[in-house]
Structures are given as C-alpha cells and as structure tokens.
Image (cartoon, rainbow, N blue to C red; front, side, top):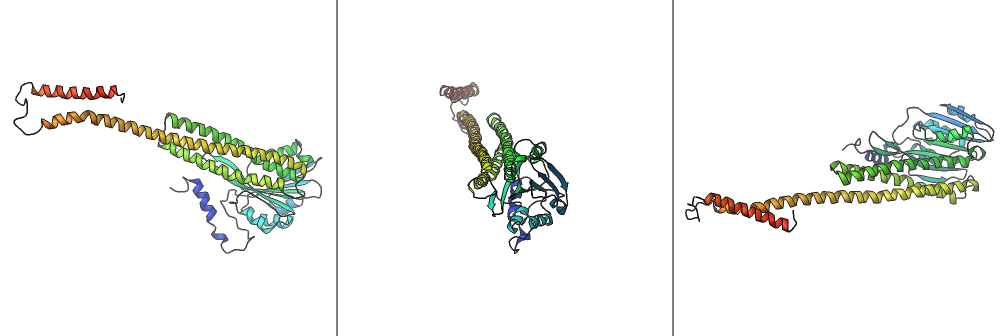
Length: 364
C-alpha cells in the first residue's frame, strides 16, 4: 500500500530520504521534512512585571528591534522552511550553526543540548489527524538564552496560545519570573497536551475492546494495529522528553534558576504519569489482540466441529447407500417388496443413533 494508507511509513521515508544534505558540511541550513506552513509568521512578545508588548510581523529585522536589556523577550517563528529567517535570528543571538541545522531538520529526536550561553531543546507536539485516523507528531525547537526564549513550531497553530493569554492578562507567575520560567511553561503546555491525547486514545482503546468482544471482524485487526502504531509514537515522543526535563534538573546551566527547577520536577512527574499510562496501553493492546486471535480460533473450532458432526452423521448413510448401490444380484432383501422402506428406516435409525450419542456426550 502507498503512504496515504500508512502515514508512519511516509514519516520513515522522510527520515531516511535526505538527498539535499548529502556531502554538505555540518551546520548547512537545508530544510528537511514536509512544508507545513505556506508563510512564516513571527510573533514577538516582550514583557516584564509592569508592561507587555506584542507584535506580529514577517520581517526579522523589525522583530529584533523590540529586544531590550530589561524584561523577557519571546520570539515565536511559525513555519521553519524559510532558512533565511532562521539564519538571521541565529546570527543576531549568536546561536551555534548546529542548532540552526537541527531547527530546520524536522525529524529530530527529542533532546536537550547545553551550549553554555544557551540551552537548546527539541520536543514533539502530538495531535490526532481525523482524516487518516492516526496521531501525528510535529517538532518544536525551543531555545533558552539570557533574557530571551525562541520557539520554532513547524506550523501555525494554537500550541502556545494559552501561555500568551496568561502573559497578557498577568495571570500566574510568568510576568514576575525570568526567561527560564517561560521556557518551563512552554514545555509544560506541551506535556499537558499529552493528557488529552492519552484520554482520547484510551477512549478509542475501550471502543476497540468492546468491538473485539462483541462483534470482531477483519477490520478489527487494522484498528488494533493502528492503535499500536499510535502507542509507539506516543512512547517515542515522551520517552526522550523525560530525558530533556531531567537534563534541565540535573544540569549546571546558570540559565535555569532553582526557583524554576521546582516546577520542572513537577513537569517530570507529569511525564512519568503519562509514560506509565502509555505502558499500560501497550499491555491492554496486547491483551486485546490475544482476545481477538482467541475468538478467531474459537470460531474456527466451532466451524470444524459442525463439519465433523455433519460428516459423522453421513458416514453410516454413505456406507449403507454404497453397499446397496453395488451391482450384485444376491444382495440381502433385494427382491423384497419392503426392502426400500426398510433401508430408509435403517438409515434413519443410524442417523438418530449418532445424534443421540452426540447429545449424550454433550458434544452438541
């Protein structure tokens, strides 16, 4: 089947098909992955305890003019296929070329890298695509620096809209904390989104379980295997994310304060909770598949049992009919007027005897 029927095969093909990067030196900016946004939108949010300023633009130079020495600046770039935008931001903030390369390569594994003057993290956002009936992962790159946070989602969306609303309304601690707390808030919002994904996944799993028990059909196996692929994708996104949080907790980066590490430990607990739920999904899926295969085996056993009973019933009938179907003149009662009804009665008694024996043995 083609990639349209199996989105995970398309993702793997994208991962290993990198002809544009062959032979290029490390740090070369080449966008790898599907283009998920037609235009690039830059959202700049600069805030402090007493004020907040927000602006949307497509001009990198304009957004950089908003940076000041006081307060925190958050620059979010929706759409990362324009490598010139990424390069200009990297030059302005002094980002390592390997960071820029990883930003435009959208098939990165979730990870954390400490470059001293900045911390770079790759995380995955998950969403369910109803058209293909599967969970899809998208890369988000986050950079924490001295007084600034840069975020690079693959496409425009509402991933961080709640964080922006909290900053505008001055709800919570974010306006009174530093850039590291904003970095935590972005990671935590992604972790929180996993709970809704897992809740929807759990409901789908219950529906498939009910279908397996009540009315299994060949489509059921495809549903079970689809759920298994989604569970694997969840595990691949969340497993490394725990390493990212642990890296922030145990690292010695001066960019992360002790006040923020307390909240990072809470986010780590949430990740562990979701991972345990995903592990239980794997166990339930394995049990569901076993139930389905057991049901198929039982139905096959019933079919074979019915066929065996029918064959056993017709064996004596075939024997009697075969004997009296031979071309001999001296067959017993061959010339007797009641011979034909007697043979039919014999067949009937033989059939009844076999059926009675089956009932007595409780085979039917």
